[in-house]
Image (cartoon, rainbow, N blue to C red):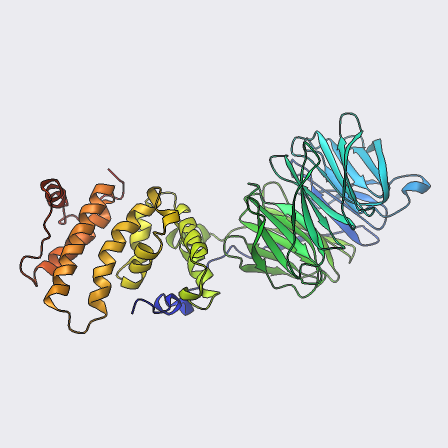
Amino acid sequence: MRRVLWLVCLGLAVISPVAAQEPTLRTTLKGHTKSVESVVFSPDRKTLASTGQDQAIKLWNVGTGKNIATLKPNGDDDAVEIISIAFSPDGKTLASGSSETITLWDVATEKRKGRLKGHDGDVLSIVYSPGGETLASGGQDGTIKLWDVATGKSTFTLKHPGWVVSVAFCPDGKTLASADRCVGEIKLWDVATGKNAATLNEEGHEEVWSVAFSPDGKTLVSGGGYDKKVRLWDMPTGKNTTTLSGHKRMVWSVAFSPDGKTLASGSSDETIKVWDVATGKDIATLSGHTASVKSVAFSPDGKTLASGSSDKTIKLWDVKPTKDAGKAHSADPFQPLLDHLAQQNGFWAQDNDKVARVFHQCVDSVSKDKEKAIVQFVGDDNERAYWIGAYMTTPAYLDGPVAKPYLALAIWSDASERLAIKQKPTQQDKYDQVRLNSLAAILSKQLGFNTLAVIYKRRAEAADAEVTGGRPAVSEEEDRIYESIDTKTKQGSDKPE
């Protein structure tokens, strides 16, 4: 039957996703005497900076794990914990946030070269814009300040109801995201005007401790407190598209990998989780810390993950894909669709448009021979062919080349379905099988999908042997196209003509 749950038809119980290899612990860095609150890599990935409640900033050689410098502010007004740090894009300056003050350090000389004052309370988060011309800071006073790096002047003061514990620039530098720990909301700001462009909130996401943009700027990730969730937000719409569950306590920190395919989250449950962004799967849980993981960061080359903890240590993890991971994903580009359906209650319980989007994303992920990938996915499964052909060609997806093979699949699979559900198909049913397969072959050839054309013509010829006069009435041009399909070859060309 057409309405058999796709969950059953696809045999999802025996399909398991292929994930990246679990990161392995490389080394543990020790030197801080109190909780480590923030870790960040230098743009050249050679140095890791860390800071915390011991009022010290430590610089570490990522390759050797050695502590190469310790920056310790002098003066009573600096004798407080340093909660946040950020490298400038050129790596020459390190900014640190403490009580009411942002300190600017010359990395080469390890000397303080400037201070920015304006907050009325602890500076909880700081970040440079991608171009380095602006520094954003979020504070306990419920404000965000945008600073002109060249002049050291505050250009805008943006307001939140509660503590601003995290700020992040979109990669294009035009939008700033900020997290309010007290009221559980995320605000998006227009950097040029200082206007609040949008406010994102979701029921249950009552505390937001960390936000980060994906490298392409299309997704924002947030980590929550009471709900223990990691949430993904679609930036064009501002909708919460995915909620990741698995942590047992609050999520302190989130970070995207440089390629945007994975993200890491650090939690009070003393673990780091690594997530597959496309599927929402928890692909690794890293244990070893003995207290809350307060900060996580990927190196610019994506090969190292750093985690800072209240246990006073920093751990460096090697992040490597398995040798077979690329081949496995290439062989089964539709795994995200299968995983998505497996999480639900069957195909008919789905949001139709969302399933269609996931399916199209799977097709788009195939760099070459999209037609071949579709053919392999369908195989001889009439149910798959029907849904891909008839269901996925919704009005929203009829435009564009990706929809073309589905149209041909829909024509063919409709006849196949009608035969499949009848124990004794009539002569008319068999004739329809010939007619529709022939039309599918012609349409596929016209669209340039030659492999599909060969498949449909072979099916038409096989069915034609059981009936008389099975060929449909077609124009001379269509007949020429049909005759030009060479079924004697092993397969048609995978490239459109």
